[in-house]
Image 1 (tube, one colour):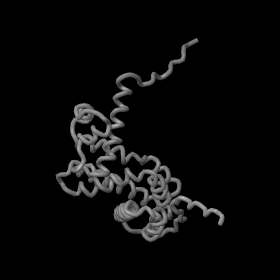
Image 2: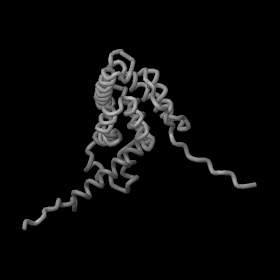
Image 3: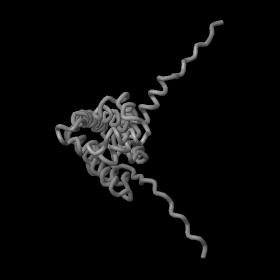
Image 4: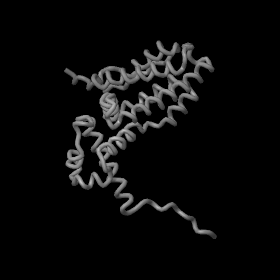
Length: 218
């Protein structure tokens, strides 16, 4: 009878190192979200974690390397989920599912919005990262839109690449408005915008709002 071989859990310094990297990325996310890339410092990140600057640099040799790790983590909403949702239900449904998932990631969205604005300067360390990201996201959306056009899911017959660019611009703009004023209904706003852009009816689903406590009986 052969002995069952079980995967060995990661232990010792490897697990500790992975945890430390995750802690540094989390702290850097808070610092960069509050201060921006240029205003945030490795020293402040180290201070938040009660670490020496040397310890932070051991895991991330430069501030720009840490920024890329933070952005990759913030942008980790799975593209696989988007492609799966869009294949089954279409681009409008997939976008709304993506929006709903992001309602719980407000700090991450704020970080991406802030870094995107800062990185418009060509000398910013995240400039190329955001250029590549926009190209990738628009290409993925265009592919999905083209498929929806072929299946008759949307009536807008313009070039899918142009529609995709407009769709991402709508998302960025409505997201920024919501970050500034969370009272706005982001899902309802995105629903109305997509109906106009895509020429298709999208069932409106409103953002969940906290219930107001009922007044005590008088």
